[in-house]
Length: 120
Image 1 (spheres, rainbow, N blue to C red):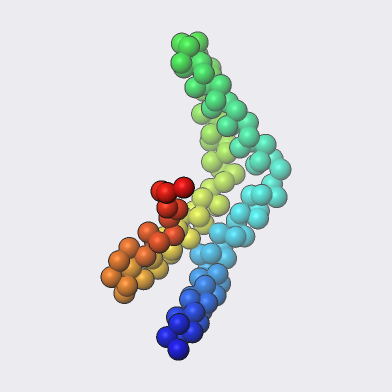
Image 2 (cartoon, rainbow, N blue to C red):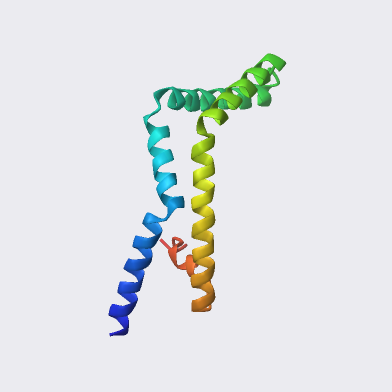
């Protein structure tokens, strides 16, 4: 009986969380970002340029122009992904609050159960 109550409560919690405005907004913002080809290209270009800049830093051939180009690209990416990042942070905040409350009620760090084990 207790197991079925726990299962029902867990399913209800999952339903409530999945329909929470923070989670809904996060999914919507992720879909928008994933569908934005220009944003995806900017993100890829930024990753590539960051790698090139790191390589140039290590061999001492980096220039001010390289850093300025990276900064401009980072600003462009930031403006494209700001809504997604804000929604992601709001979703994380919600899940942190939920985890804290579950941990308080259980008397142990609930999220630790979800971490992969170190054996294997």
